[in-house]
Length: 326
Image: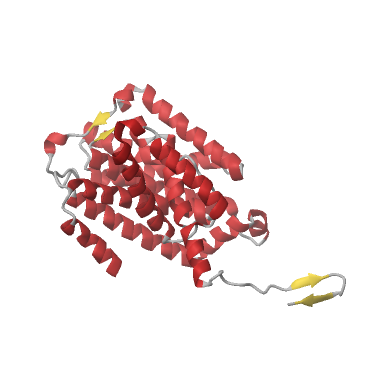
């Protein structure tokens, strides 16, 4: 709680609007990383289509606000439920696939949704949608002139989601998800229903991602398929927990507060001359992680502390001796 209090006090010390913006985006990726970690880190289902859930949340709340004047606070719930519903629909064909085939299928679905949103006029097409900025400031519409209210909203979301993930990790659901991650067939033979728990993880992950998409739409006051549904967004969402440590609560926090400032630094340093440099950096980080630090920062921390995780001493059958050794 001390670290949360210190983080909450940061905007009062850092008054520069740009650095406050970086803090907000870091916290956005903390929430997105925790959401993806539930299905990717714990359940082992590497989704590359989370940008679609993010965009669905952003578009649902924005259309409700513009067409029906529904407050974004309710739009958050609607956006999350829409994303979760779509996740449940795509889960049935996609869960028949495993490993990289599942990842490619989710990536294809995400790209398909992006193209569909580009094609229809009611979504704004390629022109996108502009939120009613003339209402600023309006707490009812989640529209403020200052970045401080946005910071505290997303900080609250990050804390709540992190605590929920920690609770799930210690629960029976978390144990089942890790069992499915280790060996899905063995988990099924033990009586666990892999499809049921993978669906639960994907729906929960999509709901949180959709809620975050609503927040982002209100924060930027403008959305289009290129800004809220790009495939590169899915890659960033995945890379945040992978860098910090898959299947850990601290992993997405470490990843977000390392990679996002790094991306901003390259963008500011190179400016217009460095278009795509951040993607090159992300690619280099992926290669480096794969070769030198496959478990992420948390795995490195555990090795430095001499912690290799719980050691199981399961009975091992030795057919030659006809006995069980321990």
